[in-house]
Length: 177
Image (cartoon, rainbow, N blue to C red; front, side):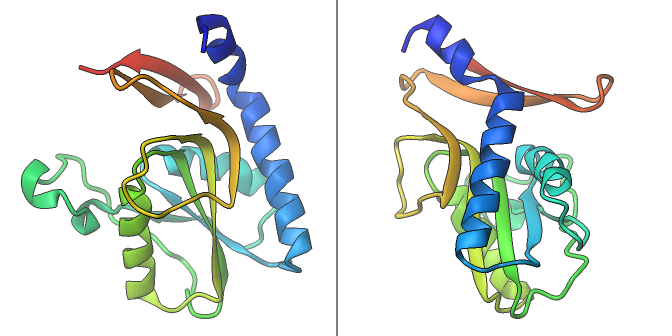
């Protein structure tokens, strides 16, 4: 993928519009009219805030911090700014839209599902991601992805949030350190 193609594909506002449109269609096709939404810290929460507004979801937005559910927790230790999960609704029998910024290996989603099921038994979980990239290590796939990108092993994709500019979201591709 050329740099020009990457920049065009990473038009974050357009990707958010695509994701919300595809989610709306999926919810309609499954006859789900009152879903709840959960964003995974940190990038997934930023994306979920935007989708929550665009889809006019009635219930408040839930947030997950999966730090303690990660399978590499003992290797990497605790992140210095662990924030608690906040699920301001009952999970049981809810149709959940689980949101993350980038689906890569599948390990973050596995951890998020483990935490959700510790809170209750949802009716269904729809996975929505802004970017789906290859290199899956677990059998996890998104129900809705705004775009798919293949990166070199020395690259990663990063979502940033400009808090001073009305929380404007921006995707960028960076060289791995």
